[in-house]
Image (cartoon, rainbow, N blue to C red; front, side, top):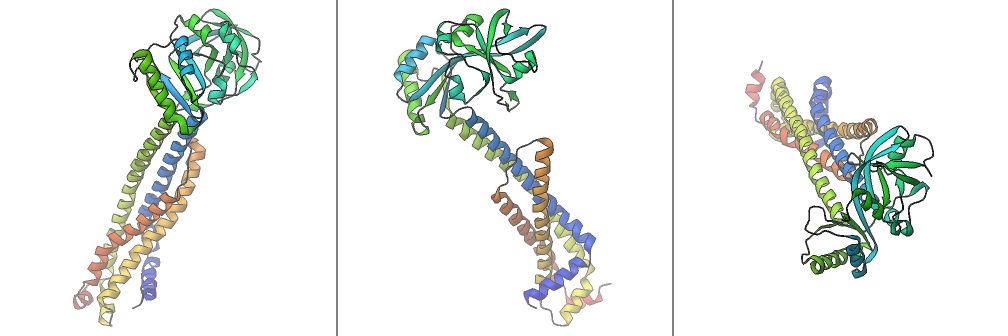
Length: 388
């Protein structure tokens, strides 16, 4: 019996038990769909995190002194800037929690004191008004720029420009409101206010600079810039590791690593469903062999070889798994789009996940169909004909 005849016989067996065949395929359908959905959401989440990191500025290197042995001042930051040959901008900042008041509205938020170069370094545009300038920093001017969330909490839909608010009980003038940046990992980047770092240090009662963001000339010189920073800390504090230094490349690499781990973990969990589906195929095929024992005996009696019987049941198992795989691919795409829309989760379809899921489904059908097919092919024709 040739391959086409094996296919026709196998197909007749599947069509003859439609409901049982569908329930058999259901395990494979769920398994393949689960792989597509979970992997797509994992990769979409990874890409979203990477986009957020890149949106925070390009070629940015961050120095964090909090908890380290270095205590930077603005003079130290100025000397660092002078020592670097690869930096486009050096932006110090200090942060704290403050209470704002406007009229009867009171709101607690984060204060970040920084310099005039912050918007260009962080790719953060002004919605209206302006950011403070170098003169404001030098003169410790009492001005603030509001994040979108803060502006809405204090002023609602009113224009905040030129209004006076109290920050920890002291008066400051609003000179601008920033464009919306959105949330990253459940942190609202618009729930913040900015003021000149000199004004913030006076308000918070500290001259220490907690963080320094440095924008390198290009991605290619990031490593050189880090070396220059370490050299400065070696000379200034006699310790190149006096502060934590990490670049945007480090964050992107970490995001890639976490994304790969998450994708592998979720893919493995979904793969278990495929294995369960394969076990279901084997179980149904064994039942089928038992039910069709007399049929097998008759076919052997009229000349069907062991190879013919083996091929018939093996093809039937593969058809079930491949059909389930095809339906599972469509179900996975539909399910991903639905979940992404309803739950507002990012999703990215990967051709590799499609190939792996479908290929694994076909392998499952082949692997779990071998034993039932072998059992059918090994039946003694005389005993099979006697089977009731």
